[in-house]
Image (tube, rainbow, N blue to C red; front, side):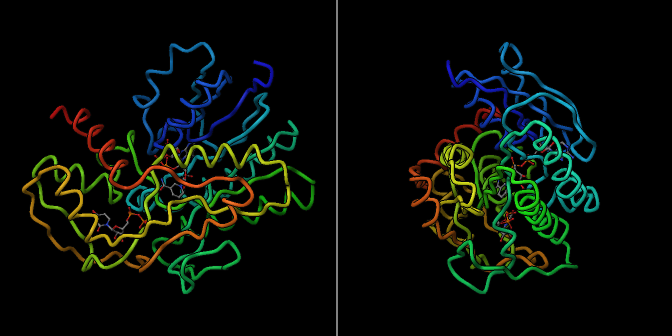
Length: 315
Ligand code: NAD
Ligand code: UDP
């Protein structure tokens, strides 16, 4: 392979990271997976350990890292509200100190670096669907702030490093993504509903279920991340990556029940503080700049994810 690269994936043992490592290896790249196993697991990447192009390193990105790499995907950060709120100070440190350390590494190596940012930078949005030029509506002192503001500050650092040091940075604003390798106890809605349905436990809908999200299957997201890091225009700016198909949480619960054939009952629970009411990506920039759009519909993606959890739960 002529354009074989040595690629660092921080957070590589997490849900998205595992898929990304798999894909990069399948293309013949060398992958250095760095993870402190805060929300990811060694088990996710166990099947990759025998690959001579794969290396796993336990490391916390809040500390500097000195390695020789050509390309960096900075994914390290817990993404589920349950996990990022468990140790909020560590969450902010992971985003902010992690960004400083990984940008420092990218600068020393003159390597292109991609930041896994999030739709949470838009907070509870007043603009719908969310376009990259919208500055967001984030509560800076609420329980989600450690994640939202940490990610916003990381974006600031990425663009300051670009302006100050003329570095090649890419920022992906990822919208809700789901698929295999999510933890059973991840706490996010798709995995929760599927695991609850398969176990015959109550489906926990927070609030009245009228809030919306737009769910992207993980293989589409990985395509988007790779297209973004390969994109050669340094002025591209942040790029939304997600599937614009919007659905209410209540409809998602019904869909999962129907697809699993479960007899679980829906139980309504209090809505978490600052839970965004609506969320849908405007992906016109990704379409135009990257020629990217999602291809896996919710039905198909849910089927694959249900199959994965059936196996994981040995049902
Ligand atoms: P995840 O929690 O499954 O994976 C995150 C990984 O980062 C885990 O393996 C965790 O152990 C690791 N990590 C956490 N703190 C670390 C630290 N200090 N040092 C080293 N490793 C650390 O989450 P995910 O869904 O795979 O998300 C990956 C990235 O994508 C995150 O940055 C997340 O914010 C972003 N993102 C994800 C979604 C989504 O819907 N999945 C949406 C928006 C943004
Ligand atoms: N949610 C729910 N039941 C659950 C988990 C989540 O109703 O068991 C709701 C949550 O309140 C939110 C949406 O599903 O409105 C998506 O939550 P998730 O934690 O997956 O991601 P978020 O987009 O909030 O970061």
